Length: 356
Image (cartoon, rainbow, N blue to C red; front, side, top):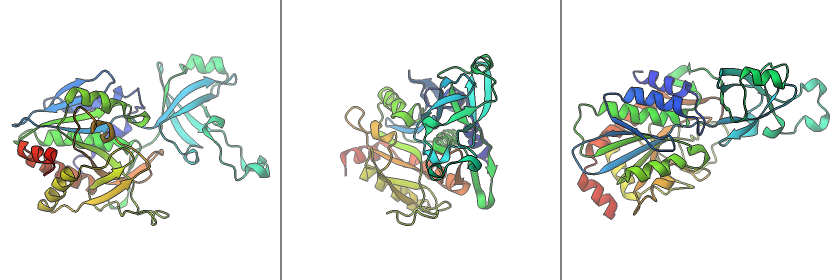
């Protein structure tokens, strides 16, 4: 698992939308000597690896994770919060969190549920919503919490560990989409001594979870010819998912997105990737996801339009404290990306853009 330490480092870093600098610092460190690094004014990091052609291939992966933000502190010292990104209320209660304050990280527990011993019958099957919950940091009062450094607007992230499970499974937070960030970092490093007929732009985009914002600004700087957004995909290999209209499993290899709520994958770029996968003897999986959008949704509308697809790694339990992926899927996805970049020359880009 030669790439696993990069994935561990990226996923363990905390960075909700608007507070992603800990993540970009890691990416910039790993890009030293491999790419030219710059930033847009939204905090997205742009890693440019020049090749032998004129075409510009943008590989965005968002750097932000779902989390929370401090709202107010009650007089008793409990922290009220706002969700940042899409959370399902079922997965919030009794989870450990970290408040990133100017005085350092403060740990607490996200709670609000009463013990079953004192619940009234009407509350036993009721779903608690986020506005009813709070974070207990052990403060004695509001004044005490403020003295500890808690302030409205402070970012809050899940407090998790990085775990190896059986059969090359890995458990971590923020795989959505730090696994995409790891892919473009590893890709650019792999290209160091490889000739490639294009210019590669690995981009850690900011604030994707709240509106695809960094993808918009960074694409305006790059003005790409091609976009391959690097993402995670919802698999159908867990109980209750067997009625979905696609098949996707952990351990089944890289995934090519066919459509989501923001983009329909460009069919000519899709075909190029499918043919490349066949030549490399890499089995592809396919996915629909009409309940969410990706950076490709805004990048495709840059300038005169950018042929775009979404590609990445199947990942269970996204938008919770812990997600899971199979490391072999990561390696196969990286291998396929290297092959795509080695073959995506100016003539291929022109044919994709012309649609023939």
